[in-house]
Amino acid sequence: MSSSSKDIALWKAFKGGDRDAFAKIYNLFIEDLLSYGYRVTNDRQLIRDSIQDLFLHLWHSRENLTDTDSIRFYLYVSLRNRILRNIDKHNHTTIDTQDLFENIIGVLSVEDELISSEQYSEQIIKLKRAIQQLPKRQQEIIQLRYYHDFSFDEISEMMQINNQSVRNLLHRAITELRQYFTLLLWLLVAFLISFKKY
Figure 1 (spheres, one colour):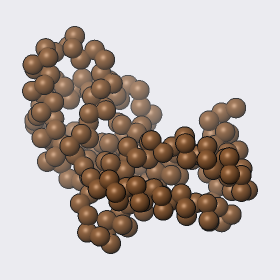
Figure 2 (figure 1 turned 90 degrees about the vertical axis):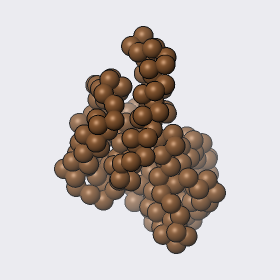
Figure 3 (figure 1 turned 45 degrees about the vertical axis):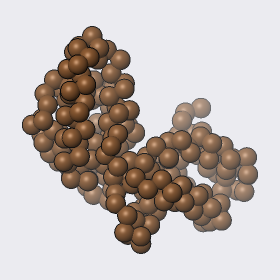
């Protein structure tokens, strides 16, 4: 059974009132949702409250929810919208850039073979500073694309902008980052793009 078929069946069971299906959805996605939430805002309590509100809403509104073949995507969109609404209400700051790329950089298992430890540390510091200088939408697109592995179409729908705007923002982000460092960026982008869907 394909991933989308499993999602369809699980979502249908949940919408039908199956508490085990609901618990499975929660357990499958809670860690990813927390991780994504921490990239949208640095207010951990707001993230936890938003996730709790989201799951309460899902359960109480389950019969009226739309169908989906990607529960992960559905939950990300829903959580993002809920967090942004809560940020607007409470005037919170969006996008925690402190460790935006830490998980991405971690996938480069050959980094120690490519550059010395000292040079790598310097590049990481430069990368973090560079990320903090990017506009918030560019930060989010980089994070969604390279950390959460969403396609351009999914990011477009999630952020409510067209596909070309997503590509333009990502291109501008990479162009701006290029001013701050060279080797690490190209290693990172080349490695990640080779595994991504376009």
